[in-house]
Amino acid sequence: RPRVQRNRHAHQAWQAQLPTLVDRYLAWKHNGSGELAGDHVFHVDVIGVFQYERHVNVIQKADESANEALLRVGLLGCSPSQPRIAIRLECLELYHQIRRRQSSFSLQAMVKVLCALQNIMYSQHLRSQFSATFDIYLNILRFVHTLLKRALGRDGPAWKLRGACPACAFEVRQPDEPPLSPARLHSMDGNQSAKRLDGSGSADSRLFHSDYFIPHAEVERFKDDVRDRPGEAAREKRVTTCTDNWTAAKAVEENQIQVFEQTGIFLMACRHGFVECIAEMKRSGELYVTRQFVIRALTSLIARNMD
Image (cartoon, rainbow, N blue to C red; front, side, top):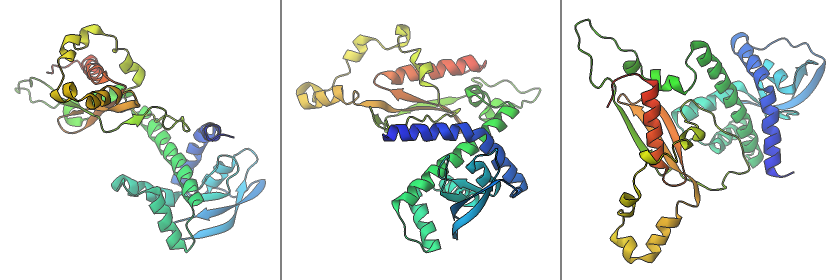
């Protein structure tokens, strides 16, 4: 099967199990390893921080998947249906915390460290299996955080704009203190370094969902708003001597955007440095559209005096 189909089927299988995997993870997190009674026994090789165990027995109940049985004993498999290798949750959490403090520490480096500690030879398939398991582990953590934010009433993009910064959102004012004008200060800026070629990453159709990112469909609603777009006359005046006299430079300027699906990102933060929203800039000419959407979203969600 093509790689696209393999990735899609694996993603669908993992997503079908995710709610029950979250329940098993929370049970293990709070209560430790669960009961060992079951109807079936299967074997996996277990990767830990300091130990590599072969043919470990895992007891599986009749009404649970293989990864549910693994999570009961603090393991997570590399495959959604028939895992042959499992990784201890402590090992995955160790790498998670390392990446949060040092994002440049790669998966390959982590797997090579584990191989050195356990005196086994590194191979590429170990890196691929660790990567697949770590992705699912992050999905479980994101699911838990989503449930927590929903219970606290802090879910959705509106919360990021209303309450991401405690100093801006939760104002404490003395009785005789005059109100600030403007009440809130925000800064916005675009970045054209985060480019993505059109058609790249087609083998993996998964989408990363986050409260920070504004959906592209929402930004697209302002694309044809002529009143908010700069005039064509002003756009035609932005020429340089280089592009007038050098045809090659002009050709690059006209065609460089067409090869990119994403030309950068646009970010808004409050004056205390808290990021409030991020939007991806698609194709050309959307920097202005993205800025207009962010401003409108902010003014519609926050009934405050601002400049």
